[in-house]
Image (tube, rainbow, N blue to C red; front, top):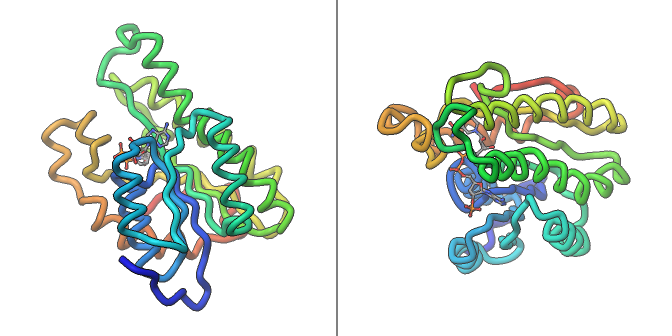
Amino acid sequence: MSDRTPAKTAKIVVITGATRGLGRAMAERFMEAGHTVLGCGRGHAEIARLTRKYVKPHNFSTVDVSRDEQVQDWAKRLLAEYGPPDLLLNNAALINRNATLWEVPPDEFQRVVEVNVVGVANCVRHFVPAMVARKSGVIVNFSSGWGRSTAAEVAPYCATKWAIEGLTQALAQELPPGMAAIPLDPGIINTDMLQSCFGSSAASYPTAEVWSRTAVPFLLKLGPKQNGQPLSVK
Ligand SMILES: NC(=O)c1ccc[n+]([C@@H]2O[C@H](COP(=O)([O-])OP(=O)(O)OC[C@H]3O[C@@H](n4cnc5c(N)ncnc54)[C@H](OP(=O)(O)O)[C@@H]3O)[C@@H](O)[C@H]2O)c1
């Protein structure tokens, strides 16, 4: 897709985990609406494909959000070129393979925490100071139904999403007026992540593409009034 005419109030939208699933679908809807998307993911090949397909002003970069130095370099480069984002969507996450908590190997438990919690803190650390200096912008940290309830065999994932709820509400108390930090439960959507935990029954849920047609207009309406409110895409 080539550059679109910018929307009347074109926003700069940072999306982590933009290569697949909800992040990818959101990126496409924001770009269609004339907003600028700055996305990341770990997969080199998919980032290269996105870069070929969606030319400037959009930008897709290979970044592992759990690596603070990678996030620092990425944020530095983007802030210099685009200024502070209007929307920072901390979407990237992993889920553990279904298993009782006592069966989850230590490295897998650690990896889920590193991406889902440390990764969000890394993005906040490197993007939010510029947003605070401008006193505007909305940070949406992707939580889950399992950030407000629990289920067997996904304890590591539940632990990280409950952490995201607390982390985000504390962050909301730190922001100046004019900004918002919001923990968001996106709903239940048929993505690679859902297939990992629901198996074949994931197919009975909406696709990310269908979900994004409701989610993106919802995200574009968020502002300071929603600061600290745990929200859900309905
Ligand atoms: N799908 C649902 O029903 C559902 C329900 C509740 C909450 N959520 C939440 O919604 C968000 C998106 O979920 P999804 O279903 O779209 O998951 P997904 O299909 O598994 O996609 C996850 C995305 O995150 C990226 N990612 C993973 N680790 C990363 C890392 N270390 N650094 C950068 N990017 C990374 C992946 O790309 P690479 O592999 O290229 O890195 C991919 O683009 C997550 O926060 C999830 O917890 C989803």
